[in-house]
Each structure stands twice: as C-alpha cells, then as structure tokens.
Picture 1: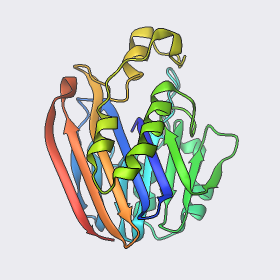
Picture 2 (picture 1 turned 30 degrees about the vertical axis):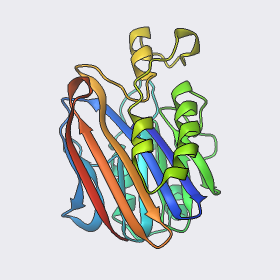
Picture 3 (picture 1 turned 120 degrees about the vertical axis):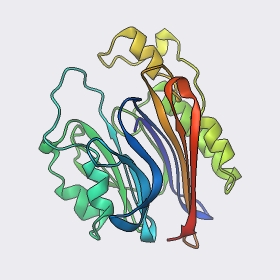
Length: 250
C-alpha cells in the first residue's frame, strides 16, 4: 500500500473515511476485497504470496492498513509486513496495546495505522516515537513517515478534505485516487531510487507495464455503524479489470 488518506472522526456522520491506493508489481498474486473465510466478519484483499493484507476492516470498525518505507538496498524483514494488519484484525486486543507491542525489528521499514473503533493509532519502526494515538483529523501516509510532505500526499490530503463533504458519494475520493499526474523534477523527493522511478512513483495513481497501482479503495464507517467498502482493481498500465463492493453493518 503506497498511499493512504484517513479521516478519523473528521466528519459528523462518519467515524472513519479512507481513500487508499495499493502499489505493487503486477506479477505478485492477489485476491480482491472480500470477506475472509478464515476470519468471518473481516473484509479486505489478501496477498497470495505471503498471506497478509495491506488494508482491511472488521466488526466494530476494527481497521488496519500498512505501507512500506522506501529503503532501496536494505534487507527484507524476517516477517512480511502484511502480517501486521492481518494479526491485528484477527485479534480482539486494543489498537494501543497492539501498536505498543509490535516487534519492529522483525520487519523491514513499515507504517501501520490501526483502529479498534474507539481510537486510531500509528506506529512505525522508522519513527523516533514508536506508537502514538492520533486525535480526530485527516492524516496521510505514503512510503515515508506519517504526513511526510511529499507532493502527492499533500495534494491527496487537501483534496480528501474537500471530498469528505460529498460523502456518502465515493466518486470524488476515487477521483483523487485516479490522478496520474507526474510531479515536476524540482519537487521530487529523493528516496534513493533512480530518477525514472522517482518520477513514476510521484503520481497518486502509478501506471506502468510491470509495476503500478493494483487497487484503489474507498472505505467509510458511518456514525450508525454502517460500513461501505469499495475496491477497484487494476492490471498493467492501469487498466481496470474488477470492482468489489461491500456494504454491511459492523
């Protein structure tokens, strides 16, 4: 998952609102968003290579999502980062306890957002503060730390704040996630990847034959507990090939 914008208690009618793009190599096998057979009442896509997930939600508004920290050349962790949201969603422990007890040394660089429906927490094994509760507001994650001022994250977060006013209509948020504009070279972050990749990854929606945005997700939990989860899946060069929609009480 390479871009997540979250509105936590930022709208009077919605406890949680999420707009997110997952970027990955197209060859990596994935299952689309659905209810999990091994954890009934939990919904999300699954990584079929390592078995984890990048984003999911369960009963009571239990939510988790992960992004990697872009660190070219560093070794992989002992455990797949997709296990972080999976283990939280499969448990019943609080978000505070879960984030505080994560063994950051077991994973490559990560950012994790976790909510038990009562509070929203952020933790990262690359942040000087291991875990912290987030007050109501709008937050963004890409492949650095929380709210790092990368151009695509600033743009997405600003447009998300406007799109909140259009809920429950998800289309304005999908419009944000579909933006494939490349950032000018003078505004690119320097993350250690070649300039060609830095340019490609600067877009909110990433497209190329081998790597790109695999899924766009808009998720909301209304104040009355109603869940809406919509995912659009993409193939090489950003071609839409599947949509999943889940609507239920949580």
